[in-house]
Length: 274
Ligand SMILES: Nc1ncnc2c1ncn2[C@@H]1O[C@H](COP(=O)(O)OP(=O)(O)O)[C@@H](O)[C@H]1O
Ligand SMILES: Cc1ncc(COP(=O)(O)OP(=O)(O)O)c(N)n1
Image: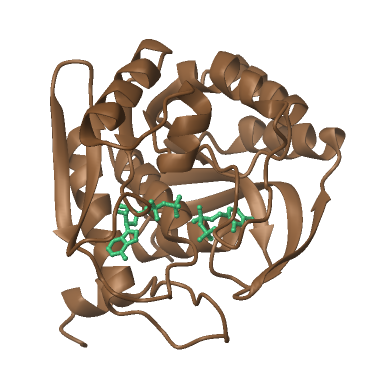
């Protein structure tokens, strides 16, 4: 007789990237690589590749709710990440259902714009993000433009980034990570973490590469996987950072534009295959 193994379960609520580098695809690859059972609720389908986003096609609100209800009736997630939520209405419905099902360990990646410049969240959705989603976040992970949009603070100095982190914490997020991929272009990349008590930076070598498609999705999915295991947010943040750094460092040659990160690098390194 086969043996059944208990596993941690993580859910991504996000958009599909047909090119496989970001969105749901990046999230599920990351969950799998980190040994967590992955589930997905789609908000929208994007026609996308490494050169950009060619189209965005939302799933209906009924479709969104039906997927969430199916998960809730059978497969309680140990952690969740939200990515591209498409519009204010989708954010409100998603937040309502997360509350209704009392799901915990929510990582909110407030995806707004793809690196190529395509809009993935309407401007009208900012209000819903600030009033419905931030309060659910065990960890919120804005990049610099997202932190600026959410706080109204122009982030042109380390002090301004700290102020933005405080504003996001005061808005209801338990832990704030303001990512540093878009912050300067020196030899190092620094992510700022604030948990309401301590403010600290995670500093890593900046990898000179154009293959950074899906970095934000992958990082937040790794955070959700870590929380699903029951890790404390601070440990989850440190471990997820190692995962994304390794994935960028061992980039893969796929597509002619901004290629994806290497989701299997972390596992291969662990098994001394690089
Ligand atoms: N060139 C790079 N070298 C090393 N780490 C990077 C690089 N670009 C982004 N990162 C890291 O990847 C994660 C995602 O960051 P960022 O690119 O700012 O987010 P997004 O993809 O949402 O725009 C962060 O931990 C950031 O520090
Ligand atoms: C479907 C979908 N969701 C999110 C993104 C944004 O991905 P992110 O990791 O924040 O960064 P880039 O891929 O834009 O580099 C996306 N592109 N598609």
